[in-house]
Each structure stands twice: as structure tokens, then as C-alpha cells.
Amino acid sequence: MEIFKKVWAFLIDSFQTILLAASIFLVVYLFIFRPFQVSGLSMYPNFHDKEYILTSIISIKLAPLKRGDVIVFIAPDDPSKDYIKRIIGLPGDTIMLKNGNVYENGKLYNESSYLKPTVKTYGGAFLREGVTITVPQGNYFVMGDNRPESSDSREWGYVSFGAVIGKSFLVYWPANRMQFITNPFKN
Image: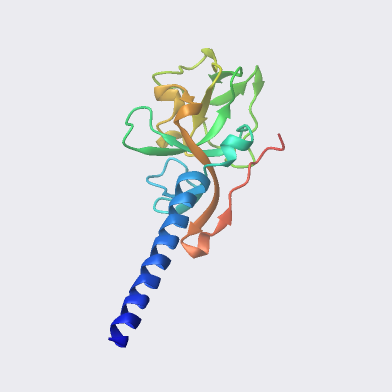
């Protein structure tokens, strides 16, 4: 009879430990940060296909998003997918594409800290070459770092704040590419 009590106590302790670990994981996953896998080449060379990143969910509730932040959001053209892109335009900003360059609020947008100078940005279905748009309140204009291969705001328009899942802050896999994701601007 004593052995059954010890086995029962062990099973109860094990169940409580598993339940506590699952609860902590659930709270962290729902409210603090989530892992995401980069799928495709739209952010190359700064992010590679099949890399895993951690995205902070809570940070977007504590501080406003900034130009240059890398975010994960629900894809506007397919809500069953998540996209990762860089914020180019904030609410109220004007964006224009001309001769392969991005102009923000009438000035040439300096992306030299994360893009090679040979990278050209051309229009799409939503934002055409030479047309100026104004980012509405509560929305962002985003682009992938690999402009020729990226489906982004140039094609399908703005990303609403409500669609943003979080701000990416760490590449954690593969281990040889582990790095913090920093905003290239001092804004």
C-alpha cells in the first residue's frame, strides 16, 4: 500500500510540474514573445529563408513602432500567413518611388545601413512609380529588404496596427546566424 502512495504522489508532483511549465509557456507565448520562421527570400540578405526569429508581442503595446523596425504581421493578402517586413512609412508620412529610389516626406530615404546601394525599388499594383501616397493613421507602409523578390506594401497597401503581431528582436536559429535585430535608424 505504501508503494501506491509514493507512486500516486510522484504522479501528482509530475502533473503539477508539467501544468506549471505549460502555463508559463502559454503566458509567454500569448503575451510576451513568439518564435517565427522566415519563409522565403523577401528579407534577404538581412534575414535568410528558414531562419527562426523571436518577436516581442508586448513591446508594441509599450512603445510606438518606429521607422526601420522589423515587424511580423498578418498577411493582408492571406490572413492564414504571417509576413516579416521592415517599416518604411509611419502614419502621416508621404511615400513616393522615383527612378528606383524611395522618397519619404519629399526626401530621399537613406537605406544604406541595411541595403546595398545597387538595390532599386520600383512600384507595384498599389504604389506606382512617381505617385505620392500618405500613410493613414493607424497604418504602416512596409517593404522587404530584397525589393525585387518582396511582396509588400507596394503591391497590397498598408498594414494596420491591428494586424501587427510584434516587433522582431532576435535571430536565434541557426546558431551561427544568431544576432539581435536592431533598428538601423536613431529615431
